[in-house]
Image 1 (cartoon, rainbow, N blue to C red):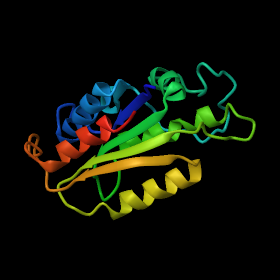
Image 2: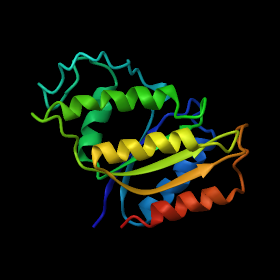
Image 3: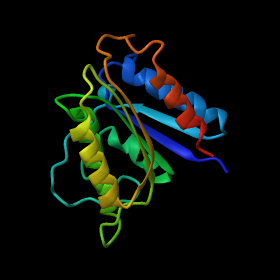
Image 4: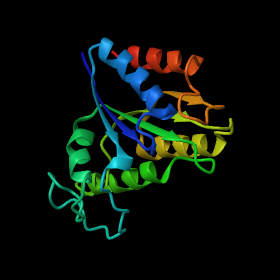
Length: 182
């Protein structure tokens, strides 16, 4: 049975190293019969969460703010798998990804007990360095708190300039992770 996959790509470089990883993941996932929708968050108009706790009243547009999150909400709600893709910025995910993910709380507000929909999750990151500890700490706490199951992670250090990822084993890992989703 095919799965619906949403990729939240928090890289400011549409054709950078993070996107090379998501492209390989997507290729593998689609070869296995899954559907994949990727959002390049940097090109979208997404405002930060207001912390107003006033969302959830309109299930088709759960947040009180009206911006490009309205394109993401329906895909997110239908998705079986959420892929968080980001370059490593100051030892964690990019602001673009954090901003969009924070706004997904409006979907939890649709439930009277603020339960998030159950999903499976994947982490894909590219970085100049190799220190992913803070990102992994956040990812592990996030999936635990939400009750989500991790399908895997692809972490590629040592890639700074666009194209540095060419020929790296992590591209194969991303493809194989996508391909493994049945």
